[in-house]
Length: 273
Image (cartoon, rainbow, N blue to C red):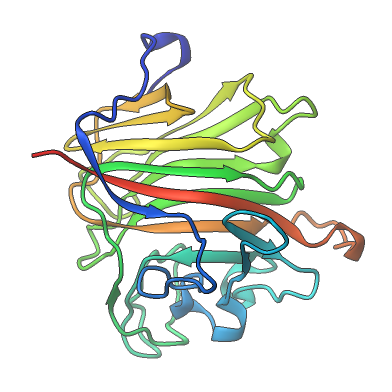
C-alpha cells in the first residue's frame, strides 16, 4: 500500500465513469430492494441483528445509524458485547445448524437464522463513494466495507472504503482514516490495510471513495488520493454500511446514548465502456 508522501498529488477523475446509483436515503422508508437492515443475520437472531436507524427526520438529511442504550448485543454467543447497526446489500447462508454463511469471522460459527439468497446490489468494479459524519464516541466505529458474496468460500475478499474509530479522531478533528484490502479466504489477495494520518477535520461531513479496478484500488478523501494498492477482488462485492459499539470493559452510561453516525449519500458509478 502506498500512502501519504509516497503518492504524487492526484484528484479523483470521474470522467471515465457513469453514475448508476445515487442513494440519498431521502424516501419515507428504507429501500429494501437495495438494503437489508440486519448485520450478518445468519449468525444471530432477528431481534439482535436488526439495525436501528432513522431517515431524514427533524431536518437532518439522509440516514442516521443509531445504537441505543437498550440495544442488545448482536451475537453474544459468538461476539460478546459487540453492538451493531448495519445495512447490507446481500445475504446468503446454509440451513440452520450448518456452518455455511457469509463472513465467518471466527471458528465454530453455526447458522442460527437461515437466510435465503438475496443479491440486492453487488457492484463489480467502478467508483463507490460515501458522504458521512462519523460517531465520535471512543467505543464507536463507523465504516463502509465491500465484501464478497461468497458464492464460493474463496470469493470472500474485502475492500475497506473507510473505517473511522471515534477514539482515533482528536479534539481538533484530525485523526486516522482506515482503508485497504483484507483477503479473508481469498488466496489471490494479501492483507494490505493502513490507517492514514490526516489533518482534515473528520468531525465534519466528508466524502470517502474507492476507485475499484481490475488488479488495483485507489482510495480518496474529499477527492484527494490518500492510498493505493496493486490488488483488488475480482468478483462482485456487496456493501456493508455500519456503526459499531466496541466493548472496552467500561460501564455503558445511559447518558452517552444514542451513538449516531450520519450518512448523506452513497454513490456508485460504472466505468464507461
